[in-house]
Image (cartoon, rainbow over all chains, first blue to last red; front, side, top):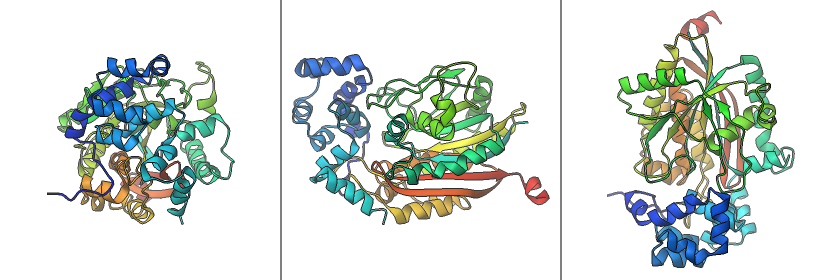
Length: 112
Length: 295
């Protein structure tokens, strides 16, 4: 049995099944019309895609770690984050419990 | 006969597309990355490829998780990009070479790589950003037949999103099969191979922001002359060493595999960070044994 990698959820078959509705909703955000529709009626949009209660709660609270626990894949979640103008440093900071400046400093430090 | 002249590999981070759109190439943050392409531009001007076979991974533009191939080969006469939802400008379309695509597909399936064949396929930033980095002038031109891209492309997509992923060994073999197919194609083409993505990075989880400079250096040092060394790592090992999205190195392995001759590194640029990623750009030369002896 392989050891888990700390702080990492492999997006495998189990996660893919669990996250299907959430990821499908995020996939729809490739379309500007769909992004606008989500902003106009978030509750209704999530209902239309059949999000589970956990997924709905995670989206509502903008909690990326909870979205991952609920099966979200980061490439799809990034499309949702984009609606709120958040990039991968913003969501990196949120997931690691740091400020965006601290998160960027950590990335820069990895190069030294 | 078609000839494989060499390969270019590059990071494909979406924010590069924004930096290009906002003309930030000379900003202190971006310059260490963009200057890595000065050499690439000289090499392309000198070598004049007219085909690029591009190994990349789709990030939820053409493929969704409902039907996700492990390996997919484009066989279209044109490849469009579309809105990917994260605010980077949409690229102009790039022409394909369907006859070469089908030749490669035939070769792959004969070699027991049972690929998905795509006559209609959107290409995402993992293709369009390296293209824009290599040919900034062509990328910026308005869609017009008078100013085409200097190359036509054959996109080869590898799943790096949903596990189980193909192994490093499998991707190296995939590349070798593509390389053999190209070299048996009767048209007089100058083919370059492109591998996109990586190097170490992780976007998701409490380990977000993970970068491993030492492992990246190990990969860059070995992929040229002894790529087999890297095949000893499982995908699980790779995630551990290179981060959850560091698995995009599979595209580099396939690119390296397609360079079937004597391979040497002409250029390497490595910079941390671009966005959340350790960014790398390389140029590899591919020479036939006979050419090497003559040189």
